Amino acid sequence: MKKISPAIFKDRNALAVMHALLLEFLVFGYLGFLGLFTLETLLPTFVTVRFSLAGLLLFLLILTFLAAILAEKLEKSYVPLQKPWHRLLFVPALLWILGILALSLYKFPLWAIIVLVLASLALLFLFWQLFFARD
Image (tube, rainbow, N blue to C red; front, top):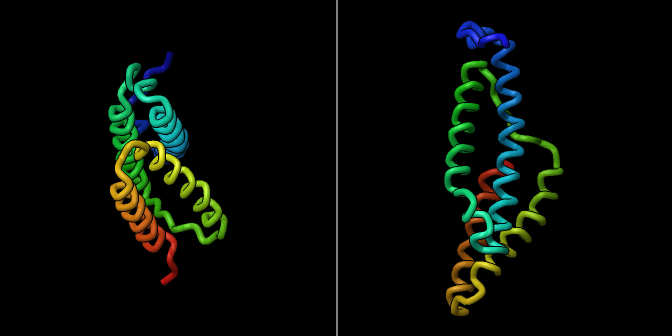
């Protein structure tokens, strides 16, 4: 088996391939985390008995930081998508958020549920304005 030499980190093509593979891994990693988080919400301690979701999230955040460093080293820049399909993701995301809130607030008092749902909707609106609003 061939050893990886430090010279590979100076080759821009190898770095570009590593960056692309890292981004693909991050997409699947975050989707997996979302699925495990949903499973943990539906069946408490089903996932966390086996391993920590916090550890997985920390690992994904470290890899995201490394991807950002690689992108800076490769001088890549990202522009926001101008396609309208991102608006279609709003409906499933809103339903997922409201479903998770409904399951997690099942035994809360009614006034607390109302306050938390309104606060979550306000944050969702602010994030929507931040990421998708036109200037």
